[in-house]
Image 1 (cartoon, rainbow, N blue to C red):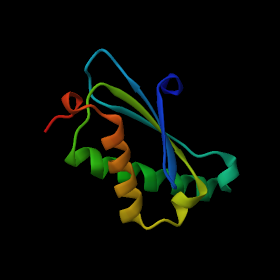
Image 2: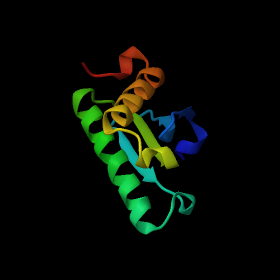
Image 3: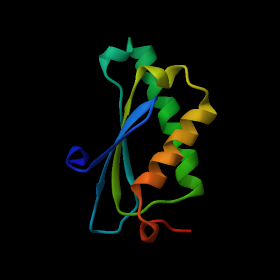
Image 4: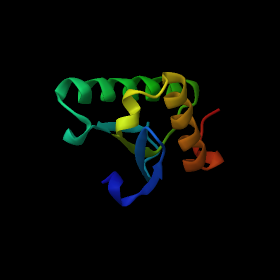
Length: 102
C-alpha cells in the first residue's frame, strides 16, 4: 500500500510513505532484496535500518503514516550516524509540520 504514496531516496535506502487518515501511530516495514546478498547480509541491513528508524522516531514521533524502507547496498557500509541522519532528513522532507508531535 505504501507504494502508492510518496517516494524519497537516500544513499542507504529508499523510503515509501503513505499518509493515513486514521491518525494512528506510524507503521514501519523493512525490505532487503536478494540483490543485496545472502540472508546474513540482508538481515544485517534490515537490523541497521530498523535501529536507525527506532532511534529517530523515538526523538520525533510521527503519526498517521505507513513507511517502508527498502535497503540499498550502501546501507551495509555507511556509518550508522549517517544512516540515522539520512532517515531524519527524509522525515523532514516527508512530513508537514502539523503531522509531527513535538
